[in-house]
Length: 134
Image 1 (cartoon, rainbow, N blue to C red):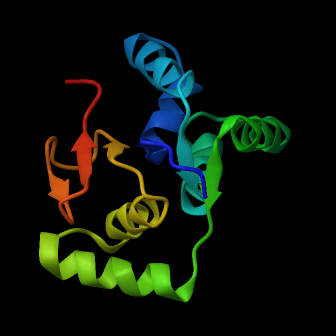
Image 2: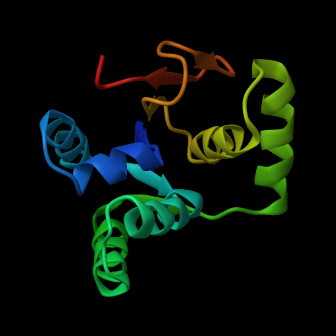
């Protein structure tokens, strides 16, 4: 997998398909090389339908576009789940947040962009959580 520093959480994707100041920040992050997880695409589909009120056709188009521009998409495997379980206890995280972080670590990313986790958290001495909306 190519080395890309930036990993984007689902909320960045959701804001990128919204309007307002957060949309601009999210779109700027997506202008740089970034990595996603299959989990982020799945969560985006769910939030896109429920909160953004997107049609299934528009969601499919958005996921195709995200998949095309992402430098890499991390798949979820048993080892990723196991790594997430270790992160849950070590950092007192919710499981699905830990699963996203495990995917970012698997991709050798150094920055994890999200508004959902503690800004500045250093995970495994190599992945820094950054809230770009601060």
